[in-house]
Image 1 (cartoon, rainbow, N blue to C red):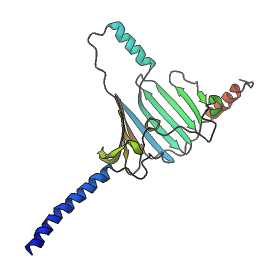
Image 2 (image 1 turned 120 degrees about the vertical axis):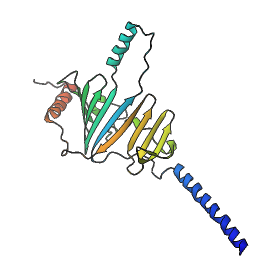
Image 3 (image 1 turned 45 degrees about the horizontal axis):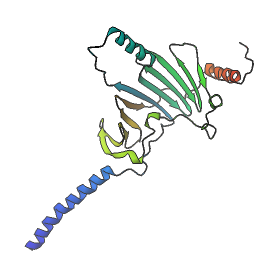
Image 4 (image 1 turned 180 degrees about the vertical axis):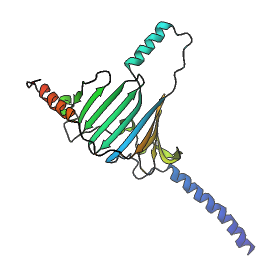
Length: 232
């Protein structure tokens, strides 16, 4: 009887250690489908960019400081990108570190871009105009998360909790990303001197419709690109 009790007493800790080992393995085990999911058919996404402050150089001359500020004006940093998606129509409202804003509309493979520095001027881009060598096959649209195209099964590191959300963690060199384990949508991306947080909410308005002014601009741009006469 005593021998049985001793043996039973040894088995319980052993089973407990086995359970913990299996749990640890499952934390590192890549999910069956490690890929990110596309944004739902209708949703609002906010990307917020945060940059590490650059330490001031006490030996910097006024001319060097002016040159630095000029370069920053020429290459502004994104601060926020609001993405509204409804079917194949997407609208992006971008805000930059210089105060400049931009509005980008996408309809399938067609892109419209206008920013606050050139009000009233719309830049139109279509596959026909781009003539990309890899853009001649099936419809090619911009990925929902272009900055996370490297996320794959090979980059999977394990499971962690971020912002109170159970996540799948991926890493590739200096790049790291955390996807919500249930939705497979990103909540955090870290890359060198900056990181991006992602927040989601239902689209508060009805289905997006491409504004008439953009449709007219598209037709005008295509005719102009083809060399057709355009009556103003």
